[in-house]
Length: 79
Image (cartoon, rainbow, N blue to C red; front, side, top):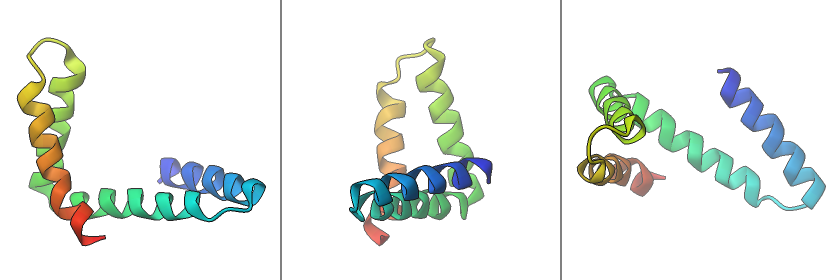
C-alpha cells in the first residue's frame, strides 16, 4: 500500500505540473495490471519466482523473461 500511495502522489503532482492527464492514465493502467495479477495467487507467486530468476543473475533469464511477458498478456488485454 505505501508504494501505491507514493506512486499516486508522485503521479498526481507530475500531472498537475504538466497540465497533462497521461501520467494518471498510466498510473491507473499499471496498478490495474498489478491488481489483476495479484487476484490470482498462483500466478502472482509464479511471477515473483520468475522475477527472482531474472534478478538473481545465476540462471539464464531468457525463459523467465518470456514467461513474465505471457503472465502480463491477459491483464494487459483486459484494461
